[in-house]
Length: 281
Image 1 (cartoon, rainbow, N blue to C red):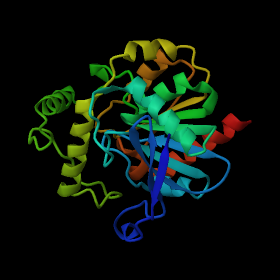
Image 2: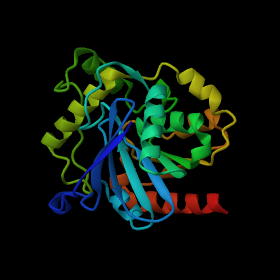
Image 3: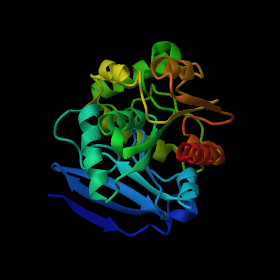
């Protein structure tokens, strides 16, 4: 038995950051609370799996919602949703999200995974390929090896913070706010890190080898986007993607950081719009 609840858009948020036009709510499936934010209309639906800090507004989502229905999920234990009471694997999490999407009345959809959400999105696609029209990744943290990381040391610091449950750890470097993200001040970054650490303590990806094997002959049209100035991943991560999933298209976005949705939203929207149109031909 599922239950869907809704809250009104936050009109005041439009002054400070994007996302004011999105309606927020939750859907209950399998005993889990899955948050969602939805805007836009039309037969074409884009479902977004967010990065490790959970769902948040972005300039790109606002632009996409002018073209199609956009639904971003907030998985259980991510962002501001109810914390998990047990450790969950990404493979299991994807099944929960698939059920939540169904409860929202969405049958077929384009799927987009941002950062850590790329892993969840890919697990969803390989387990329910009949539902996914296309899949795209934005700085997807899939199949990452040490040589693909800008700073392996920062990843080790993050793992130590997760192990200690220490979201306030001072050893992790904090970048200056990007001009397109003026709201990303110290308080915002600390809040994002708290959400990120909480989620990572309860999430695993122990079946990555199985996932890699299952995408060798991937049939769903796939697009991998990476920011040229990504602070986490080197451009060679696109080569790693091609090794694992030869059918995937790859695109390096000039001027974009890891958060392409906010640092180069126009380029992301153009790439996704073109990709979706070509897949429909």
